[in-house]
Image (tube, rainbow, N blue to C red; front, side, top):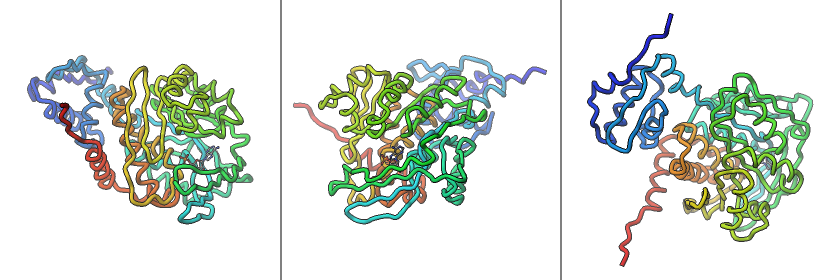
Length: 391
Ligand code: AMP
């Protein structure tokens, strides 16, 4: 029997067609609750954009919302159900030992994919994780991630091997650090397997990891994700540059810090570096500058977002990954990959990173609440909001 058909036009006409922007959002929101009862979306403007960019909806640049199609209930559910907008995260899960001018940690839980998952889980769920750990990785840490909506089917556990280990020491400015030791351990021969249940991936976040592993995950995806974002670091530029450059040709967005952008491009000027890197594959480039914020480059456009000036920075480890998690989490939540929405995503990333640095390791990210995130976003708006008279 054919699936029942929901006429969106009639639902919307019940509320009237000519609506102000804010009302439009409410109508769409009510539509969701009435017809498919999906999870609650916040009333943020980003959620509005999500719906207006919905390909099922025509949204001319006017106050009028028109629905272009009659859809089956199954089509509507498929489109709006978050499990169909899946975010897959690839990256290291690790033990870290960190030294800062203010303290020192023993082996604590870290890894790019760990930070990304904790951060992104504030925006979208489930997060489908791909990584590898040794038998020494605590089950309680895996359980904590599961409780946050992180699926671990793609995380291999090598019982007889040791987890990846990294140790680093920060300089007095907390913006630069030296890697003291990198023990690849389980990462050395890691061959990722993308589970069948991850094949609906629309957003793929390639966290810092062996470039060949990042490439293997892209190649295993039967359908190309809507957006592929890649993070990497100088370590891989030094030992796997050819692979790294190959992966660059396959991704949409690259994220690196300023010194990595310089190393990759052999240019000191970040504008020249960006122009060069944008010819290597990615259409968008984000250059992270620690406490000095982040730049987003695309074609001839550039956008700058500051970092929040914080009284105390305790441990910057994972700030870049946390930023990546907020960035991709927001994009996956809103399903809008326009340059404008990427600007909002950068602010989300910066807000999340500002929490990460307040305590050692993942500790602060684990405690964080939605209310705190909203308050911090408010602080960002305040920080960059100014009126100026041009005389
Ligand atoms: P971030 O401070 O955002 O650059 O990320 C720090 C995290 O990256 C730490 O938790 C480390 O475990 C992880 N990490 C450090 N070096 C590497 C590497 N070569 N490959 C993958 N992950 C790494």
